[in-house]
Length: 363
Image (cartoon, rainbow, N blue to C red; front, side, top):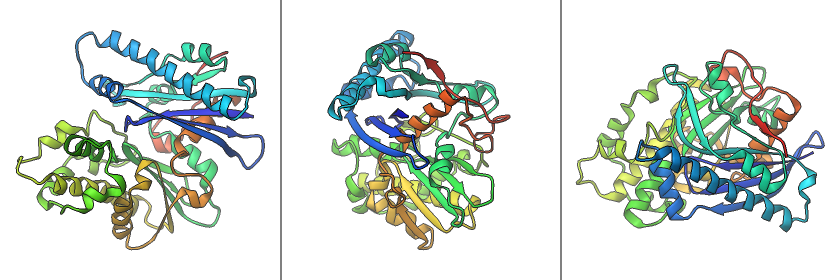
């Protein structure tokens, strides 16, 4: 009952691989691996978020390149841990999102991966394209992780909220006895990371220290929050198409101190998450954080303050390392596909009903 989950998210930092064992009622994450993207690959992927010259060819070539890196990560993980490919039921691979346009007039999402090539290179069945079926059924195709959060983290007695802070932030409301809801809140790390890289050369603001050295710019924060996404009711999802460096620059006067802009972006993320929780999960008792933002101490402090001191902890406290929840989730999604079970939540995505997700490429 071994499944592998591969996640490469909106942050464009690299590839997370997790091997999960679902053979008992208490599944476990057996082992993990991480492969960072180099700067050239990251820039190529960023360029594909906008229309450009010969983009179909470039997308196909990047899909092949990514699939080779996915395979390298999987094969290395198995070799390091002495596990044969034949022991793995399937790989659930999210692929790298370059476009996400679920609105009815468009109705598509694109994640780069050559699943056939990945199956050939690993000799393992591959499941990918998890979002398209939900969009075809009228949903947002995102977020998908709330169904996994429900399966792994829901309590019968405590009202929990799970917050994933990746490139984009999303929440899952796990209120006992109630239908699970979840939705994207807005930018997570992606704007902070991009601004930090541009001004410091560092891929991210370690522990939020640079942001903590600045001061929030109230007028800028107010201008950013005017974006209509923040006032939309769920279900809703978003991505780099909406929140990107150009969007940020459109709101700048070019005389701001860079560290003050960073502080404002951190506050934007914290406030967007907190307001989402307060507005849509009013009776919450506990908040658990996962994703790369979980390691940003300044961000967690601001979020805790915005939630009036309610308990905020990492999913580590629930037995799953905050860095590996999403990779774990795509292993679970792969299992759902193999078992022929739905893995979206219609109340979360807005689809017409629960659907079996994913396309299967047999080994």
